Image (cartoon, rainbow, N blue to C red; front, side):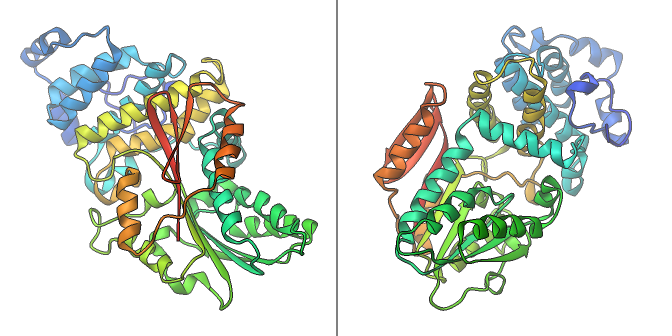
Length: 426
């Protein structure tokens, strides 16, 4: 494992194979966590804290409350208790608890600008990470739901257009566009010319095992096999670094913009005076796009105080881990690796990081609606065909997944908890 040295024993005694981060305390924090005999006796049991240690969820909540109040000794006792209750191969709450424990340890292991750097993950190789991401894609329908619903809105918006330009703000592998390429190529009147501008930063380059040229080459090959004229414009940048000159738009194009699970990573007014989140939305509006697709987690973690954010993380990811639990056995090693590499780091970021170091900043749909309306957008309701396609998709998954349509916006949830919202704008 990669780290800054051996973690403080009183805080991080989690078996090595159950740890993602190897965060260690600073000398000052180690001294702060070192209790005297009198203090150890006072805090040696959680009984005095009024915590039912048989209730894992209660212990997780108590840890967050103590951390929010900077109760360092109380937090130490509770973390020690939590350490004994969690397991990466246990039930959903035990597995989520292991991730939240890591987040709490990382929160106390550093501060300020160094905080995110304390999240030293045991990075898998690129092929391994890709296999984990594909497994998550197959295990639960959240990502398929987002991509399929966005593609349905895009296909509807560019009907009859001869020059289509898709701007994707986090293209990753580019897999979302394969079905669009095939559909455009199959037009009875002949295919249009398609351009895709793919935006991505170095994090995705690591997962791919290479740069955006790999994506362009792959999409070129698929387009050629379908007889579709194709161009690819690579933009090597994070979303907040993108300006209109990067997009290389041309007169006569039908412009489409895709924000799939991406815009919550763009910092807003609570992080920086530049407010890149609203700047990007206004910039896109200035292009007069045929449609803009937005897929986001339905969670409120952007500007809420720490303890409320902690509780929201617990509630949201409880549903996610429960939904994964029905898909694969609890001792499945690939599932364990997938949760650790694809979910745990987001959870750790939500709990451990503050300010500009925290990249996970979700907002509920009502807030996104207000941002798009302020930029001059109006809703572009998703058609009934999209709704029916998603219903068919869910036939292959557990009955506890729930699809709702409200005013042309699609919501996908697990039981009573909504998880993802897909909307379109123009």
